[in-house]
Length: 316
Image (cartoon, rainbow, N blue to C red; front, side):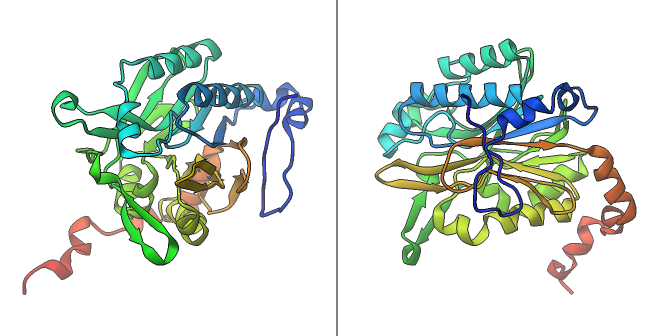
């Protein structure tokens, strides 16, 4: 039987609910409110095994009525060393993305592939990569690529966290416009970008209704900051926030926090995949609720022009 995880409202037990979704019948699938699927997985250096896992999750999401499926940062693999990470990387024209375009086309589902290890434009000379968030439509076409802007260079000795993403990753040069999808206009970020509200505000100003942060948070930073940051981005932009996540042990050197989340524009957690298992949580993306919240509390209209917030920087 297919497994399906949907953990809500901080319950400690998992709800195994794929059959329950199916039993509620076609009403969910045919609803005018679109469904998004937020996935959680444990990637390893084994690219083939990772693809099988992602395929299973996407197929489960499709059965649950999802029109767009969100996979986490490092969905393709998580290497155990810099050398392995670079050696396994590919271009956008490589086999991995080709397989996902075929999967999207076969299932007629949109895919958010967050955190693909893309060989840089000068790969042959500098052997550096981008951390790329790729959107594929239901026809199997790449419609947007965002390259992660903020790189995770952190030394938290008291927490046992030491990562330097910039040692082999190129920061992306720019944001990309929100993408019109079957669930609404999706603004793209990746993991550490979550900590920079300027990015989410810029995407919202350009029409984003959903923000997405595919991630592989460490256990230390995830325990302290993951949910509060996601809910803050949702509340301050009055957007849905969807954050696919890595969970568990990838290899002897790295463990991820999990808790893939879906959050609504009021800051309510709609779904949480928990901190131990791979799975999928489904969320209805009710854009009328978003519009009602923005109408009743017009924060966006009250925001001052950018130069106002920079007025303290002006020389007197």
